[in-house]
Image 1 (tube, rainbow, N blue to C red):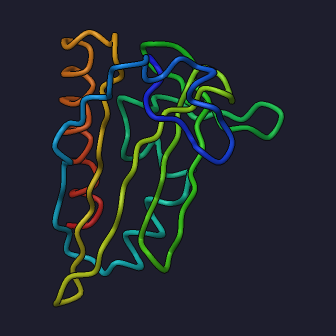
Image 2: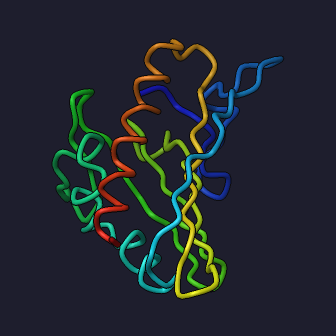
Amino acid sequence: MLPGPVRPDQHDPAALGWPPEGESACVRDPHRAVLDAPKEQVFAYLAEIQNLPRWATEFARELKFEDGKAKVVNGFGEFYFEIDADESTGVIDMYAGPTEQALALFPTRVVALPGERSAFTFTMFQAPGMPDGLFESQYQSLIREFDNIRNEFS
């Protein structure tokens, strides 16, 4: 996993060399799902880090904690993982990276819809230098994981 956009309040993107001067990140169209559950229920589930292995079964094959810090384990190795969630806006910013100083941003959001339904969106960025095939495989994995989210609320 190569670094994507990094957490601006704690990490210095320039120090990581991301994005390289004159380059920008590639953004994949956000993936979204309309769910048959109210925003509050969906937000509570997705903002809870302990639920990550239940829905992100390829990305978070295992969730463990070292010195109070969450780490996910998958086929690419171990990665630090954090969630910064704001219930009032529905924003759930997810961060993952090989070190605590190199956490890539994965912005997500839950919004209320009429009829006790909600929509969940997830955006992925392709860092400069990341092979297209790797980025595409990670995006396809996300699409498969969205089936787990839909099943949770069906």
